Length: 344
Image (cartoon, rainbow, N blue to C red; front, side):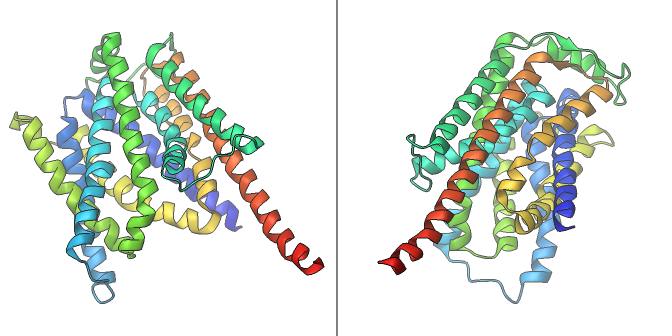
């Protein structure tokens, strides 16, 4: 029963992320600035988290030193403000399906960074070590295909778009030059890599400031401030800062409340019930949901996005299989060690 509940929550979580890619892309198609969007997204999440953190943590909050505050500020700069701004800019140049596909490289890039920082091991003489290398190669190949091969557009299940002007907007997007598309894929890959670095270093940050809720809330406050100044420096046309009753407002509320707010606790719950590997294994659901919703909403999906996404999913599962195999070997060695010591 517990595993079924964890899968249902994980499926809902991945569906939320799938919807985020589509809604955000539609907002960019309608002319919303990516930088302004990121600022409003973080501001919405901050307004949601601050009252909750105040009520739940005001009596038990650990002391926050200047050194820890500075660490959190820098951690937020590249991990939240930087990664989401770069990723959003890339999404404005590419497609929702491609952004969803690229998200599958996150665990693989995180593993590569962990090996670089000597937080993980890589033994290429063992099958699990070879599988890890193949996983990284598959992800690089998937991103390359996604960038340099769009292929034919697959037929949509619906030829009517529910959001006004999306058909024309999509025409403008597909009319982008090959260079612009490649730039979009490159920026989303860089943004995902920054996010992977954030996930790798989030553990040490939680050790420095152990309250998960306050840690997240403080980072969201810093992200709001940082994103405001980034948007102010880049977007000088203040008419693009206005929010109306349109897809832009929906994207801000959706991303700020569901993604940056509620989904965080859903991830924590799933990890607590079934572990981080199980949560990572559900990441391809986001790509599947994005493809289905994109097709239903009447937008085109290219063959290159699907092929690149499938190869990246293959790389993801190579690394996950390797991690599981390595963990089982270590467990067997730990069980065998006391027995050998007793025999001696």
